[in-house]
Length: 295
Image (cartoon, rainbow, N blue to C red):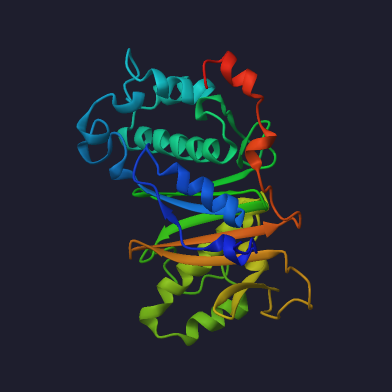
């Protein structure tokens, strides 16, 4: 059997081409390694790129984005979030909202063996998404205008971030509010043409880490930094010094290129439980599912 180590959980992301999945691959990946990283291109989803639905059908699989008489399955999936969705007026935001909810809930449903429509998505006071009643599964989300990135794990907690590689974060190349003095020195040692991409890589790693700990942008980004060891990012103290042996070993980090234009980062905290080998056994009783019309 393949190792369920934390490093195995940070393998390259799976591409999800639309509401049809492939969700079985997501489930298999989580069973195998304890975690999965998922990427969706928004123009491949309902309403994207001028498409009203998958394969040009306006109500394919019930995922119509019409807020009127169509889209019954979408209404069930969104549940309490339907009024929020119906009130959105910007088409790009509406499309991203729908795609993110389908991606999160269908992926979690596949892992849990539970119909996506029965899962309720909520957020913590810090804005971190979670599934009510399913503490054995942690979820995380990031997006650009073009891409959705979702992480799902049964090993502990996870954070993700994705940015366009050539994004200009600030006018300077080594901003002190983002980088520690050690990182500033490192960036300035690089050829000027490489600094922007390196800064985006630092940024995405820091975003992923602070999302995982539930702090996000409230956490001072210049209070910690990242180096590299054996080709993988490593969390360092603010002065660039590695932590004491054994300290922080429960954390794993990785970055990936997405379609050659974006950088995705993932941070995973392994709680040491080894993950939930059969997460679907810890969910709704089959009789409850049947009561709601799901077999």
